[in-house]
Length: 416
Image (cartoon, rainbow, N blue to C red):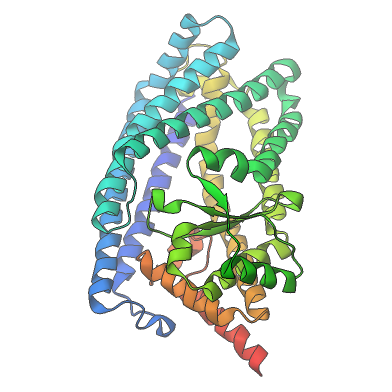
């Protein structure tokens, strides 16, 4: 029991140290010379603003990490989770209800702890640097909706896993993987139809120059796109984005209204060509399969440990076995594996991004993709000189300089 508790505390400290070192490396790299392909992207005043924006985010990130570390250590060392597990057992009739109450309370406490940081980020940092468009009413409504959505979906998935474990014992993991896999596929297909409307309005892109240009470019690339929507991203932020969701008949292109405001028609087509590159290479399907495989690995390892009473006792549990405490202990013990997997998964993701950029360049959109990426980066005060270790560990996309250099190389090959 003590060994498990010591390991959990060591892993919590390790995660804190790694994230803090990466943040420190990034801050030390701020004065690194801007890559040649990005020279002139910021003038002197805007570059100073970008550096201030980065420092502000670094400060609040550091404070949040420290607060979360202290609270986590207090909870682990005082056995608060064990006490809560014991209390919720007394309050409820049946282990399923007990588990749902336990995780409902922990989710509520976690949300309340993170709320001040989210509020400060939105109404102080993002407001100060001109990004925030969210009203306080919208912020609180979105926070409530996010919490309730997480609570409902989490309760459904946890209940299914718990019931499967209750009936099947430790062999529950493979059927649980199938169930969770169905959820993952379902939301991959219907995320834009069911989840997005809870927070944003979407409407079909009207007929006109932009829609005609998008459909023509898509046809040239072998795609027939009918579901093109515009989302009111300006409701929350001035930052722009676009994404391609679903697969098969449920493919949908979603453009933020801010993207349409900030980029030219040619640049928007180039950005969407990149997204179509992901579809061409079936990246959405591959990511979905990878997510399901990761779920299977996690559930399999958890099935090997779930009946070990030391997991519950390490967190202060009084019962010989608590599914809730075992799940939390397992999550904390598995965190180093996630830390090791992150660079691998992010490396795969960056390769997919390079490949999608190359696809757009193959169809003659390289020049406009570069200008579009530059505008989007400048408008969001993106960091032009992230530390290589931070890119390796945390970046799911290549840096702006890496993307532009790769696109230019691709364009040069085509020109020759």
